[in-house]
Amino acid sequence: MPASTRYYFKKADKLKSRKQIDMLFRQGRHFSVFPFKVTWLPANAAANLQAGVGVSSRHFKRAVDRNRIKRLMRESYRLQKNELQQYLREKDKRLSVFLIYTGNEIPHYETVFEKLGIILHRLKKLSDENDTPAV
Image (cartoon, rainbow, N blue to C red; front, side, top):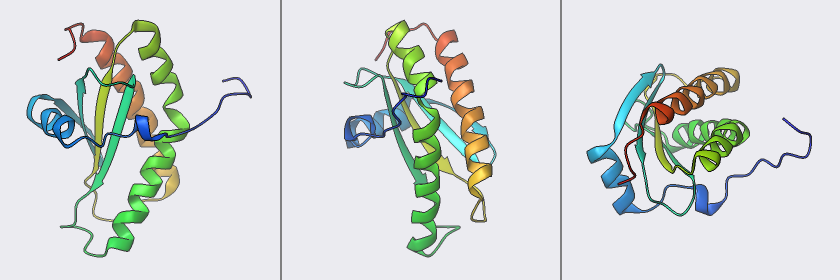
């Protein structure tokens, strides 16, 4: 990547609409890359790529731990999403993604970074295979 690449996670890139999130979980496809479960759906959102993150309170009772994991996920996503976002922009596709952490322990940053790289590469392949029109 060029040195001038900006890494950001703006408000428009965040999956915040309750209506979109409900549709994502009702109609979306999913796959797992331990310790993450990924739900994705071609979308008609304003941004090419929108993402949300979540951590189960069943495994992590303390909000401090849940927030730490979500921060790690968002940072790893922010640094690696540019390739997928550029690909979607070239193909004129839109994608909504929700990442759920399903592990039992607080992960290290390196693990989260590596797994999210795998997830984003897989999303790129899956969005290429899925040529159905956006919902």
